[in-house]
Amino acid sequence: MRRFLARFTVAAAIILFSSTITQAKEPLRILVMGDSFMTTNTLAGQAVPDQLKRFLGAQVKSRAVTGARYRYMLPITGALGLKISKQYRDGPWDWVVINGGGNDMWLGCGCTRCTRRMNKLISPDGTRGEIPALVSKARSAGAQVAYVGYLRSPGTWSPIEHCKAEGDALEARIAVMAQRDQGVTFVSLADMVPSGDRSFHAADMIHPSIKGSKAAAARIAQVVIGGQP
Image 1 (tube, rainbow, N blue to C red):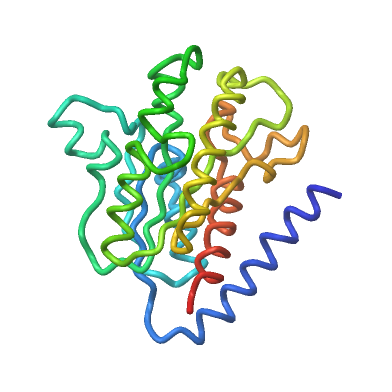
Image 2 (cartoon, one colour):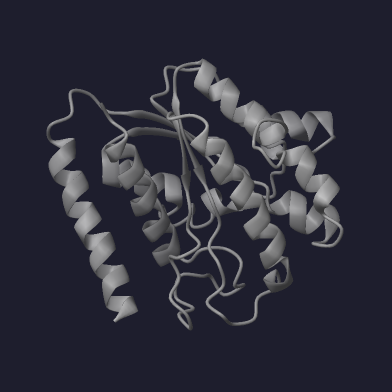
């Protein structure tokens, strides 16, 4: 039943988006930033930004880079996008869609003693840190922001299973940040994967499958449509 509902939700969202797009005056302009969650399935033309373009009929520019982090100190490769904040480009964006933080937690501190690292990304009240600074930059330029969380494992083993508590804590802080600004929405994917269903993940059980990218994009697109005046 859960699998059926997941398929039905995505299909219903596509129908809703298609009918709404026909009424739009001009295509939305969307900037996508983040890490491999956004880039996975790019070669197949099925990554999250590709799906957003299809769902919304939008002009989507993706600056996401595989392996990107917030806390990245090398200047040249950082400027090329491995530092997430450096992915931002000025533009007449209607929406900026962002994800990130997972590589900082998993690679940066190995999911142990992560409190200090997390505080640098975002404070408990959501007002300070690299994530709020990037979101504020996008908001100050007039864009609405959708900050996207990560998929959870379906109750089976994955290489980052032991990071779950830290990931939940990070996303809880991001949700608090979003509550402080009506122009910011936290798009949680924590409930997207039914228990025991491995089909939303790629073989590595970290990145999304094509199905996972499509389902995540559908949820983001629903937020974008709902956020239009």
